[in-house]
Structure formats: C-alpha cells, structure tokens
Length: 315
Image (cartoon, rainbow, N blue to C red; front, top):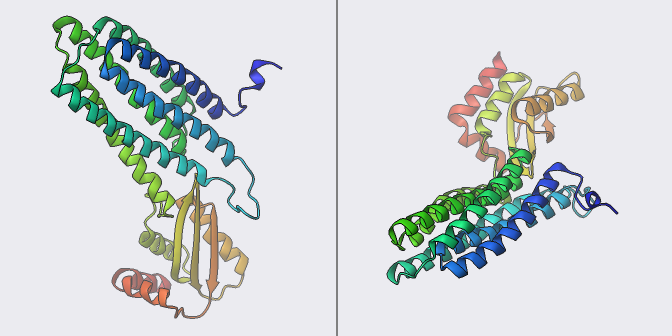
C-alpha cells in the first residue's frame, strides 16, 4: 500500500487534496499565531482558511460525485453537485466576511495590543502556503469548472489576507499603530466580498436553470432560421446548464423536409458549433403552432423575430 494509491488519480482532485492539506495545517498555525499575537488580521486570514478548507473539501466531493454515471433516478448523474458546492462556498465566505468586519469595528473602537514580530512570522508563512495552494489550483483550473474556480477564489482571498497581515505587522513594528490591524482585515474582506458575491449570483443563476450568460435566445432563434432556410419558426426554447454541460429543448416549425434526419442533424450540428450545446432535444413540426406559449413567443417577437423569419424563408 503506497502513499500514491491514497491520492486520487484525477489531476484536479490531486491538486485539490494537496491544497486542502496545506490549508488545514496553516489554518491551525494562523489561529495559534493570531491568539498569541492578538492580531485580528491573522484571525481574519484563519477565518478565510476555514472556509477554504470547507471549499476544497466540498470541491473534492463534488468532483468525485460528478463522475458517477447517470441512473434512472438521476438521469444527469450528479453534475449539479459542483454548482451547489460553489453556491455553499460563496455563502460561507459572505458569512465569514460579515463576522470579520463586525470584529474589526469592535477592535477599532477598543484597540487591542498586537505582537508585531509573531504576527509577521506567521503572516509570511501563511503567504507562502497560500501562494503554493493558489498555484496548485490554477494549474488544474478549467475555465468552465465553476467548482475549481470557487476553491481558487477562496485561496485568493487567503493570499490577500496574508499580504494584509504581513503589511499590518510591519506597520505595527515600525510605528506601534495597532488600528492598522482591523483596517487591513476589513480591506481584505471587501476585496473577497466582491468575488464571492459574483460567484454566488452565477451559481444561483445556474441552480435556477437560468440561461447561460453567453446565450441570447432571441439571437439564437434568428441565427438558426437564417442559417437553415427550411426553418419557419422556432418556439418553446429552453436553454440551461448542468455542471459544464449545456442542454436545450426547442420546437421548430419547418418546411416538410425530404430527409427528416439530415435536417435534424444540421440543426444539432449548428447548435453545437455556434453555441456549444451538445445535448439538444428538437421537436420538428410542419403545421402552425397555436399553443399559448407559442402565441406569447410570437407576440414578443412580432417586430423583430417574426419579420426576420419570414424574410429568411422568402430567401
């Protein structure tokens, strides 16, 4: 039984696990250092590290579950877990930020003595640990993987926290001005807050089956009818994302084709090439659509969409 068998085979998982181990060790170091030196900046950084550890653990579990094959009970497998993990991470980070800011306000009103030397040593050690973790996660980061991005975001927050702690320690050692400690902890928290809020919105949008940011449904309807002249009308369009997979359903009113399968293939190929939609369920219709949803679609697209479709059809 070698040590390597304990490590996951997947590169992303291995990096996440290593980052988790480093984070947990230095979180303990920073808590002890923060309590000994009386530094809020160190405790703030340890607070970030606690959410990091949770973020990395959830990310690891999500990567593991996402690989599970679909079943009759979960037809998409467990891909949604990665999005849920990202949402939980962002929410945890927001709570920690609020707690740190609250403590900083108390510290600012009643300044506490801070041991600059101890704070500096622990801050520098934490900085190097965070740099290594951040590098590890960026090596394994895939742009589309919201979960690895969430974990990297937590570590970036720590990195900023460590820089803040080192800067505060140096100022306290030079000038003895202790309010710099809570001030810097608040500044670091604000930087993290912005990223956490954006991540929370993005993951929440995905959990609500929202349309992916880069997909404009009106433009997609027009583009598809121009690219494939047989299409008269597109309605009942739904686009959403599960993990990194884009999915779509649509109804297309078409000129009765000579080859049904060939036309279907052209539509699917267009959606994959232009919109990265790999899983599209397409219902082709030859008659006019008269369902309430279709009428709503038609009314909303009366000025732009309908004219454009009929124009494309005449061509």
